Length: 377
Image 1: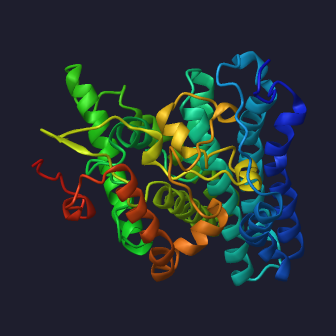
Image 2 (image 1 turned 30 degrees about the horizontal axis):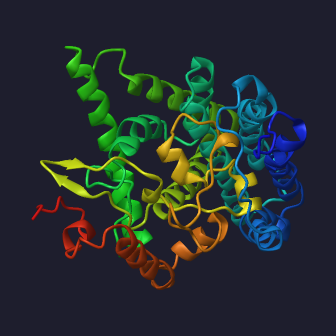
């Protein structure tokens, strides 16, 4: 008799559909203005942190061999979100640029909330879609990324991050003692360059220049140009500025999550530029129930890197015997990351314990801390 909970039902998928509640919350803020505009950040950060505290951890694992045909309701939320976000974003641009009751400050706050949605949900769902084999799903993932002007994330994530996570070649792996405010500008530049370089090198192996039309960056640029043009046509220069503002907030949200997912965790250098295989211990795991509903199990990140092609409802949870554990879910941990002294106070002792647990033979961590290839003894 199987000990795995069944996932082939609407009842199992329904909690992940909670993200749809963010749409009416955004509309309430837009229609009423004022203090109502604070509802979005309050719900996504504070309310889900409270729910995590009340509901606790989800330590159960679905059967990883579940057939995809049994995941219809889980897949559906990632598919329908794309047109929902598209309509919400451009309706907000139209409404925000024509609503007389919203001041300039209120528009900034309103589109801060829109960026929280397009980053917390949109980019996260694009991450799920880009990992799938179906071209239609990957196209929808590209659409979500284009709405935040971060299309290169697909190339960087698939060709660089998953291959080089926990090594100096991965710009997204936050180094030990690196505060977020140093990490953010570094990763903005480095991730774009590494993504472009990865695609260029792939084309070179086929004997093609980077200018070849098969380079996905042409598609990225065209898709992003369309989104920008549409924002300008609907809302003029103000609409364009509001689009750029929400895109920035979405990118900030993404990189906050990237920062906490691998902070201080490195793969052991084996010499000659080679590293050990990626294991669950190379990503921070969080089993908090409510925030995993919001983020479609993204916090089971240890398993995602161990088995990247696994759909979100089948991602496995690991105990502290196999993977390092975050003390709280992502909503609270991203707020902590914005205060580097507090973050280091919370996380640095955990990184040191992780090092002692898995790599007691390594006595000199300075090269790893600086993002260098240590010389094997």
